[in-house]
Amino acid sequence: MMMSEDTFSYQMTKSGKVFLFWNGKRIKILDGSAAQKLLAKIEGLNEEDAQLLMAKETGNFKRGNERQGKDRLAK
Image 1 (tube, rainbow, N blue to C red):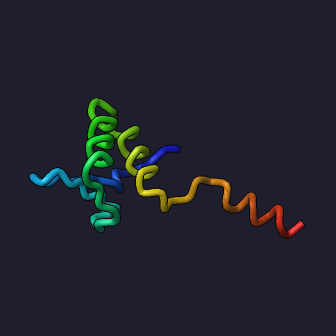
Image 2 (cartoon, rainbow, N blue to C red; image 1 turned 45 degrees about the horizontal axis):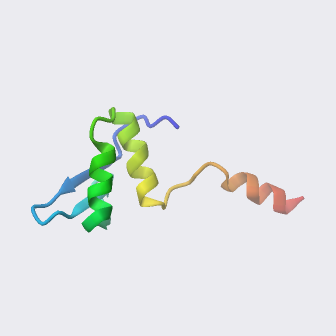
């Protein structure tokens, strides 16, 4: 999956929460162990891999197989 621009970003707060943003809109808040796990995974990744990790973390973005499922039902 190639991402042409940096659509995802994150911000860490002093209280340990991590806010995930998509095109500048806050879409998910992580806290506790989930926030720490994300920060540990993202550390040391290149920008493209970090973008993919944040997209997967949100869970609300297409995985590429939606159209295939619709086509299969139509047959």
